Amino acid sequence: MLKSLGVVISQATQQVRGSGSRTPNPSDRAEQIAKRSERRRRRKTVLVLACIFVILVVAFSFVFHELMAREGRTYSWPTSIYWTMTTMTTLGFGDITFTSDLGRLFSVVVLVSGSAFLLVVLPFTFIQFVFIPWINERERRRAPRTLPESTSGHLILTAFGPIEQALIERADKTGLPYVLVVEDVDEAGLLHDEGRRVVVGALDDPVTYQNARVEQAALVVATQNDQINTNIAFTVREIAPTTSIISSANSPAAVDILEIAGSDHVVQLGEVLGTAMAARALGLGGQSHEIGHFAGLRIAEAGVVGTDIVNRTLQETQLRKRFGVGIIGVWDRGDFTVATGDTTLCDSSILLLAGTAEQLASFDRAFAVDSPAATKAIIIGGGRVGRAAARSLSEDGIDVTIIDRLPERRRPHPTYVIGDAADRAVLDQAGIADAGAILITTHDDSVNVYLTRYCRGLRPDARIVSRSNLGRNVTTLYRAGADAVLSYAGTGSATIWNHFRGDETLLVAQGLNMFRTPVPRELAGATLAEAHVYRRTHCNVVAIEQNGVLQGNPDSQHPLPVDGELLLVGTDAAEEQFSRVFPHARRRPLRSRSRR
Image (cartoon, rainbow, N blue to C red; front, side):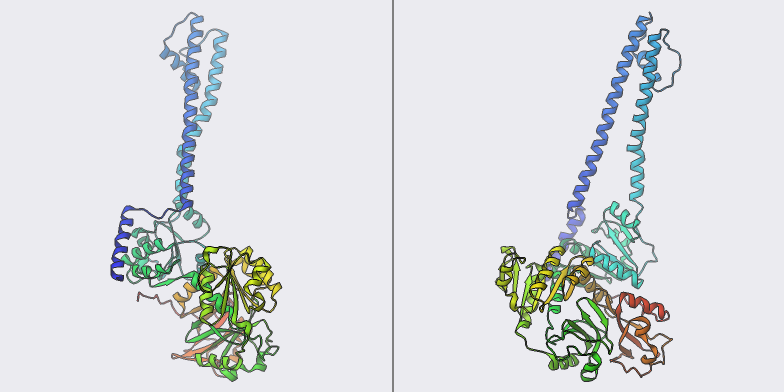
């Protein structure tokens, strides 16, 4: 059945491609209408001016004919028009002249009015219909149509939004070349002026991807709607069988179709964000919850509220020694601190752990606390993100209630409360007094800030996880009282990047990365105690890998191997600082993932 579905999709795609039609964009239609209206306005202006010019020539020719008759001379109508035209254009051959003062005065009127009129008509016509279109076309075509043949190992992006901007920032930091495929020439020119690397071309045209050197690319990222993404995957796969393709999918039904079309990996960004928010809402009572994998280690978060390690330092807890887990750092409502022995834990602290499944299980057995509040959660917003979070929480045995304004979003499961979450009665009906976690998932950042502040005032002890659609609002939501904030752009770009270069870099959270690098030659043979990596770079060494063997929680007195690799965690600034302090520590070259 899937095979036949693939044939149908292929035939439909070929028909679409053959007809050259694409899914219309409302903004594109509006722009086309505006351009047509402008062209009509210009033509109308020229037509009006031409009519005025004709009227003037006829009127002046008639007056010329009459004045000459008064002077006793007779000329034909073609001669009258000839005199009028030569006078208006200031040629003035002088073969026909008036002898009376009235005639000479009339000649001055014709000369001045003709000169003034032509100074308007000719420049306007030339500028509007010759010069400006030439300049505009020249400006529009300043963006390149093709990449140099030597381009390779690059990232090809097919849209430009918050997710793509985050990917571009990450690519710039790691020195990975990228290119944006842009259909609109004007938009491409503006992006080109901003310093973005762009290629102009239609998303459904194989020539576009050939010009973008897709056969030599490391990855193609399709983040348009499901139909366009399917077309992109088919088009790319036909001309680049080994290039990796990652596509986003809005509907679950599109996942299989995109995979048949040729996508190596399909990401449902709404599902990813909802699941990630659910993961941050859990771990209330010492229970760890995985948020990723890196180099054979499981990365997890665990809250300390309700445990016996609250108000103790990490050195006093002896977590490394007792359970073998690595303590990467501590979150405290958006502030990340790299783990040191002097770090003091409080009720709002969230431990970021690294270890094996057995080590994390040992940690859970020691610190997991049963709490009635930890089994109840409220989700504000019943869209794709909210429903995905509800499914993830329900699978972990959490009693979930969704609050939404729209009755048509109600589903049989879980429990729904229809109403405005800003209404205290609606929150009470949803059970806010007993909820251990509150997830705020609406599309509007201003609403999310408002509800975060409101819920924090009502429940100072609850764990609040908020969604941010724009990266600039993350800090605001933390100030409003959120324990964790996940942005759509940050989570989406992290998912794509981690799949692409997950063996080298893991985006743990917005601005926080785990990365691996060969042991700098300056540190080979030295111990971690002697290297002072954290003091010099603010990066923390999580593990050391040598000959395929990973050593977590490395001994600070053990010499660093010459042929080993360091696994580190740090912010973007700390990672850049590490590169400056240890310039000879070279990242492993990127290995492009071929199609499975």
